[in-house]
Structure formats: C-alpha cells, structure tokens
Length: 315
Image (cartoon, rainbow, N blue to C red):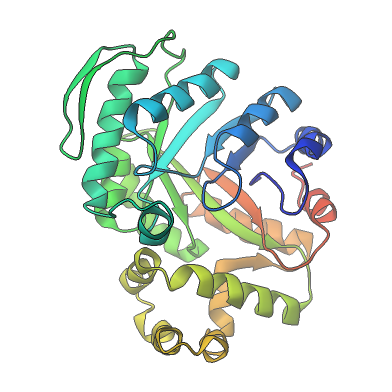
C-alpha cells in the first residue's frame, strides 16, 4: 500500500499502518513529490508496524546530494534491518527543475551515477571519484554498512532505463501502465539477470460507480500523462494516436476539453476499479504478466479510504 494517506495528519496514521499489517498487507511504499518526504513516513511505519517491508517509489536522483541520499537510506535500513528497499529515479522536469531549481539534464546518467555511488557508499567504502554527473571526494558513511545490503530499485519507463534497472539495479519500479503493458516492460528488466524485482504502482478504486471513476481517473491521467516523461512512455507503448487530442488540447490550455478527450477504455486499462473481487482479479493480471510487487495507490476519488483499504485487503 502507498503511504502516507491523504488528508490525515501523519501523527494520526499509526492505527492505519498497524491495521495494514493485521489485514495482510506486506509492504508500505512512499513517494516524494510535493507532500511528505519519502523517508519520514517509512521511519514511523517501521515502529508502528515492525513486520512491514518499507520502500521508496521513488526518491528523485537529482534532489538530494549523493552523500545525503546515502545517509538517508542507511538510516532507514538500520531502523528496519532487512526490510527496506531504496527506489530512485529521474522523477520529472516539473519536480526537479520547476520546483527544486535543479537542471533536469542527462537523467539516465544521473540515475546511473547515483546507483554506482550508492553501491559503494552503502557498502562502507571510502568514496572518491568522478561519477560522470557529479564528483565525490573522500566520503565514508559514518555508520556501519546496512546488513543485509539495501536493494536499489530504479524507476523505469522506456527501454534504456528498464535495462539499467535490470543490469545495475536490483529491479524496476513501473508506474502508469496497464496489465497488458507489463508484458512489454517486464522482459526487458528480467533479461538483464535473475531475481529482478518488478514493483508496479497501481491506482485502485474499489467502487462500481463508473461516473466517479471516469471523472477521477481522467483527472489523474491528465495530471501525469501530460508530463514529458510519461507522454513519451505512452507514445512508446503505442498510445500516441489515442492521446493526441488530449495532448493538443492540454497544450492549448483547454483543460476541460483535454479531460473529455481521454478515452473511457484507457481509464479502464490504467485504473483498477469495480467490486473488491474485480479489483483483485485485475491486480492478479499485473502479477501474471510479470509484476512481483503490486503496490496499491488509492485513486483520489472521494472514497472512504479506510473502507477501501479493508475492502482490498489480502486477507
């Protein structure tokens, strides 16, 4: 399950997190955009529910310096030994450049450089060197190397980053794709080595209110698929014609027209919705096609979040 939950003070989410474990959820995954940072919710969850696995999906590879990111990852890994996975990725030009004032340049090289630095730093090595996108001089982590080693997962959309996730990372984190799309993505990662994890964030709305899902789903799709990296991903997946009108109207400033141009069929592919059993069956399609860790994210559709969590529970 994706945490923290929207609209609830972070300090009041302890009972929610504990209930996730009681209901059979295995993992909690955070993100880092414009809300809570990616690490604090996991630190709290590590205490509230000490059986849950913790992961970041994702921390931008641009917005923290290499040493700071290594310290943050090592801290959570020590708080929850063997239960933490670090997911990093390029993020987007909006988050990196517009919001953080950092040039969004050579994203592939930045992620690759950060993976290589983190491998060395989290192993306890004294790190000095030119990593291509940045240079480090004499950094050594001032705490014991985490045991076991922290898995490093890479947010990946198209072929280059998917190969990097499999060759230099321990797996990939994918987002905003259909169950059928997994069949195009997963083999690229798996082809780089055995035992690669494929984490997929899946937006879910356990409701049979079609109008509600279409309205909320279109808003969520427009918010993401008009960002350059996601637009290119869906062109690569073959949806250029289906989304061309939406992209054009959005660029012209016609937000209402852009939403109307999103096909209903696409909402049904990218948003898991329906009865709880229908949702479980749809999620199972992702797993059958190669996802090893389905991470649910509740669609912001005005549903009762607590009831949704319970309805979708593994047990």
